[in-house]
Image 1 (cartoon, rainbow, N blue to C red):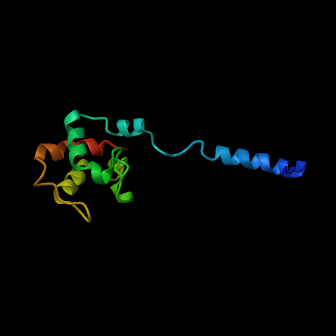
Image 2: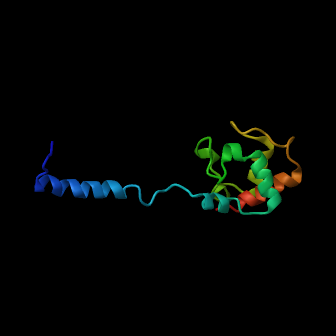
Image 3: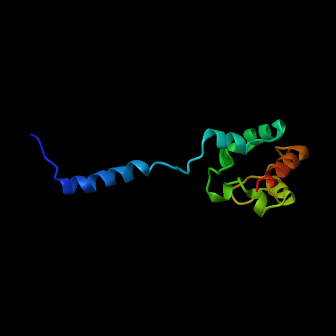
Length: 117
């Protein structure tokens, strides 16, 4: 059975399909390169981050446990001292890391994260 589409229906159908096809363009999804760039920094600091922080804060600092865990611009809202205190003592659902990380590791993480602006 063959169906014929009127010219008027076709005139609405084509633009609709074009808009639908273009809707996926310009996605706000981050690429693997963006995640890699977010973790640019001294190797030892990035290693400490990957071993202790990535499960909640994500591979690209984007946060995995709600907006408060997004660290991509943490340096805008917190100083290195504030970040170090939060790492050491924890807050809310974040555990304290003063028993797990050395003072040097905490200092390295806090300075590195404070530069994320």
